[in-house]
Image 1 (cartoon, helix red, strand yellow):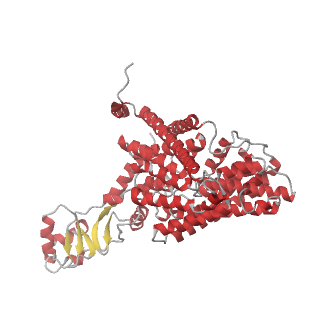
Image 2 (cartoon, rainbow, N blue to C red):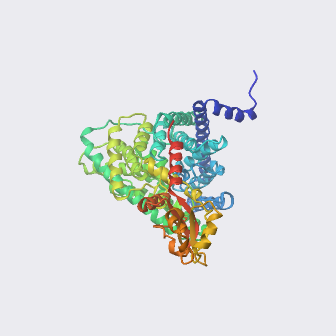
Image 3 (tube, rainbow, N blue to C red):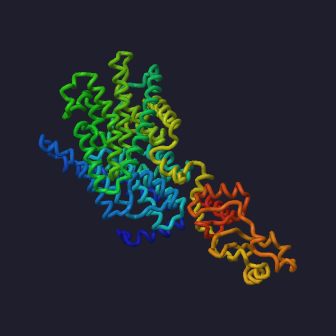
Length: 592
């Protein structure tokens, strides 16, 4: 049999792209899904090997040294980023959203591996964060660079970014439906048959890669022990309220800690202080270690939930229900601090896993208190699972992703109704007091947040700086009309910029508005440029956001507005050119 030369495969794919675009898209989503799934498997295994290497000896003497290990991991991460990566790769999902809105879905090639290395160091040494955000960023970089290699446009690049993200999440959790919904809900991908088929292909491919290489078990898996008791639905609403309040605290405390640590100028001191703080917290509360999935499995899967207190200073009080509940509440709130400290001090990871961990602890604690009080009897196991969806829904503003993720990892949809009730309640409570998710807050401050409102999103994606016209004639304010007419004869422009002797912008002249005066020769000697110039109704700064620029045009009803920086004329923006660019962008991003 004659095999195809591997060196010819890219050439064949390029020809395939032009001959059969739809088939090429399906092939591309399969390849991106395959590589994205491999990236997820690779990351999980690297972290597992790192943990095995670092935490292999659990003697009492060595256990004390675990205080320092998170600091070592974060410091190594900071060194790697500073000397090798040389750019900020934190908050992976936020970086993907920023790439879509700010760089038209272009992600640097180095991001196909940098987040994998950095997060492996952070989480492998005990950093209290998750791996999902880094692997999502990795999957997005794979999709973006595949599209770049084949010179695909913005629409296809964005779709392949979503395919890479879906494949990565499906590879981590083996939950292809939740992975697709994540791209639709968090990455704001439009739902249509044009987009859904490639997303399905990529997510299923990523999940299959993970199945074949890691077996049937997922990152964490649980079975539903009891069916949903419909008489208990008010308790699921109350749980949703608690999840929403907890998520609000989580978000605001995280922003506060990251804001404080952001003021540190010495990145090494910041890494050591933050890492040691995380190490101390883990030493006192071991469940805070890493992603936290092992602790969740211990509390829900062993039948002895108090085993979570093993190897802690609270172990001797394990028989006391009060101490156990207080221990869980302590873990619940210290998880926020440990997770925030990990990322704020320079570690690489996401809040995907911390939100699931915290939600599981919250749901279990809530149900445990109910059972201990003998108010009624509820399933602690089911409440823990529903709590995961509740907190994740509120923190990420992704209720559908949360619902289907828990439904898929439990192997059934028996809890679908309580998952919907709690997730929706948590999201509404959180949204009432904070309208931005953990991923979108910083983008909202920059007015670069992409939403499902295609009109607003298209405006934000416009690169208006490229539309600035600079080749307008400049005339002095004291120039006589007679001399001005001489300049007019040597140019084809009908708009002139008026400046003083220091090149300070004063106004502009449109020939059409002054044609009668210019034709009247009797006014040429006694009239000057300053007499006929008009001051524009608004000025545009070079750093003005597209939405603000469009608003200025709408408010002034002008067709031309000057771009001014420190009183100096930079160029002119035309409303007609902006509208033309807007139309082209709508056509480019619309579905076929």
